[in-house]
Length: 576
Image (cartoon, rainbow, N blue to C red; front, top):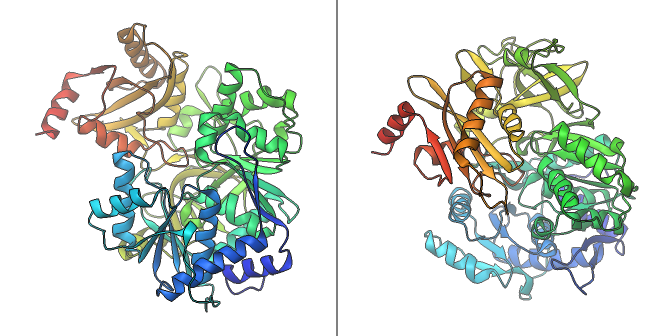
């Protein structure tokens, strides 16, 4: 079915070919007597057509439709209904009670101007209240799981350039933007995923990733449907409550392809350390993708060791690099043991072999690039860099979206990269990396880079090094604040269930000593904070720009902190 004109036509054909095959197997949110609920392609197709008819009857074709579902099944129905109706889906997380989360939803509504919001009957009052609170009470809110009978559905007239959905970026370094993912982008990236991961209609895929994020939506919902395969789904909430439920699902349902960001694997390791493992058989898990945030070699090593007795093979570990602007996947490949490089040379933007008695950094290869072109480009004049040099990753190809919704200036800047030798039409990813022997290595983010006395320091290196100071340390965020000199600020969470009956002043001093010893930097502030303080995107990336803003506004409550006088004076001025 490679000749289909649009993604909708492709899914309709899948439903017609194998109507009785299980499309989704939805696992219960709570542990107990409830059983998994299967949904066939026939049932999913019928429910989507019913809702699509309602949308078409109300003129939603070509308009934006906001989707806010806690139910995995209902999200799938509503998303397909938008595709079936010729509408533009706008996935978002349902209201979660946190102010910044609700503000994000309001920001998406302001930017996308949807004609209707689809949600669950249980969540409809909260969604309606939220819309009214931010001045959008005129937008109808429909409980899509109780949609009334409406006009018959008719297949929309779509082509590859038609927008399928707006994927709002996670905003790890800036405000979220709506990436315009077309039907052609979707079809091209699904082929790339299949070629890179070796998936077929016989594969069993699944996981817990949220559907309002590209890795969950494109990788764990749409890719199985594109294949005509089965997706086994548990909710993000059930994973967070007990991470090993993910592994139990893989074992029980013989899932062969599943993945998560690095922190998902880390949570499973921690769970295995705290309590005896349930009986698992992970021998059928042939592709375990780690992506969405920097991949830590320690996490891969610890995960492989913890679950080898359950049949897990380290050869299954697969790195994945991608971004919403390229639909999802750009590169992937075996994680392998990692590549050791000279950390000091990396600061000067080069991959060099490690030197005796000098700091090193281990880089996990992001794999080979398929279905797209890639360049490594210098920041100054668009010079294409040779193998082994670190610069910004630029990509182009059929998976790359045409731009951001209603942001022509930013679209031209981000999607219109032009090299010094005249090559045009590249997506400037904002990620740093290098290519060597055809393999991509991702080293960090351009906007996260900390520049101190002419040196380029990676914040994730600092965060990982400080984690070794104490077993009480959890997530962290390192960023710089510019005054007369560039100063490093380090925010360090203490793990849950620690009683904080330790010398917090000494822990703070130990962090400062570590940063000075290992990186020779001036530390402007160290804050020890409670679990959950460090902001992360839905893919697990630390939102360092948001953490910097919170720090400068004095909105990071600390259990203990040390702030140098010159930085304290700067903060006092910024709060006036």
